[in-house]
Every structure is written in structure tokens, then in C-alpha cells.
Image (cartoon, rainbow, N blue to C red; front, top):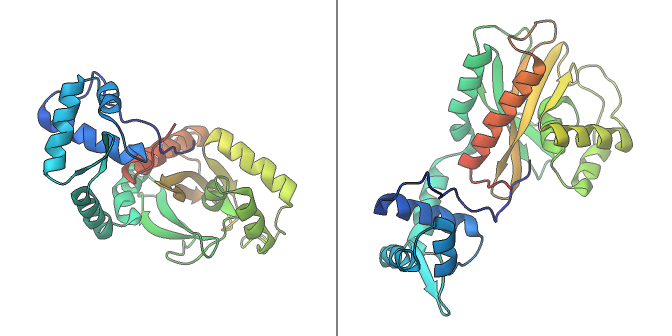
Length: 266
């Protein structure tokens, strides 16, 4: 699961046909385009006549949401930038993630956290938490830098980082916080991370916390992986669903959250 900046929005037959619906679809198209577009491109993607595409572009241009350049090229206008900046400035990824992890916690009756990747430190921090009715017997440290090498939460992020970044993080890693085991060698870690990429989610037991099980999936923003959603429970407690079912559901919710945070997938 990797994000792409070129995928067009879903504006097919299921989309609304009113002016407001089409204007919103056009704004989404412009935001996802990664550059300027033509009237023909807009018409083709939105499945409307060129005259309709041109009319919508001019309508949004009048309001400042679309900018026109020579040669019939259109892009995001200054008003669109201003509104987007105000929205982004007022909401953090953790705020957007909170209702998502609360829903997962309610579904499986376990604790779920949202982890935020800290690129400058090469670590992860738990920025939001939701609890089920079943209590944990171990403490989860919130808002503290944590390893990307140990535990499902860290590995679900590490698996989607560039190889050189992974190598740098591994070189600085210490023993397992839970067991004291030494870090894996690069070859074994590469095999494990490749498996996580194929599966779309990570599973670990007693790596970051003693007797803890973690099931985690990556969360993306517009520029790449920004964190993860992780369900954690005592290793001895049988989950309400199989780990495979939980992993697939967590990955599904993480992908939906990524979309809400601006990621576009192939």
C-alpha cells in the first residue's frame, strides 16, 4: 500500500451531478493533480462536456479557488491555499485519528493508539489513545520517543521508509526494551519488513513491552508514511477476533484515515 500523487478522484457515475457536487469534485481533482490541468483533462476525469468543465473552472476562478495560466492550464488558486492552510493549521493528525481509534477500540474492546513518526529523531511517539473495556496490565508511555525497530507500531512505519533511513535507524538501535535481545541484523530485518509490506500490517509479541501483543498498520499523509494505528493487548489474552482479522481491519481503517489526511493511493 503506497500513496500516489497522481490518482484521480472518484468522480464517475456515483458522483453528484449538481453544481455544488461538481465544484467539490473539481477541487478534489485539482488538489490531487500535483500540477496544472487542462479543460480536456477535467472533462475526461469528471465525465462532463468540455463546456461544463470550462464553466466550472471559471466559476471557481472567479472565487479565487482556481488559478489560470497561459496555454489553457489551470491549478489551485490562492483562496484554496488559504482555506486549506487554515484547516490544516487547526487540526493535528492525532485529532483526526481520535475518532478512528475510538471506533476500533469499541469494535475489539482493546486499547488502540495512534503513533506519530518523528523523522528528525527516527522514532515514534504515541499521540492519541482509546481504550476498550478490557484493561491493560502494562503501561503505555504517551508522547515519548519510542523505537521503530521493536514492536509492531514501529515496524509498521519502518517498513515503508527508504532503505537508507532504515539502515541509519537500525545502526543507532539498542536492545529490546522488553527482553534485552540485541537488534536484528540488517538482512533479517529486511526480510521481516518485506513481509509487512506484502501483508499491509505488522504483528509483534513482547518486543517493546513484556507480555504485550501489537497489531499495527501504517498511516500516510501527502508526502508518505506519517505514523500508524496499533491495537495492543496482553499476549495471554485471546483477542475477540483472529489476529489476521484484526490486522486486516486495522489496515483498512488506517488506509481510510490516510485518505482523510491527504494521501492518495494507486
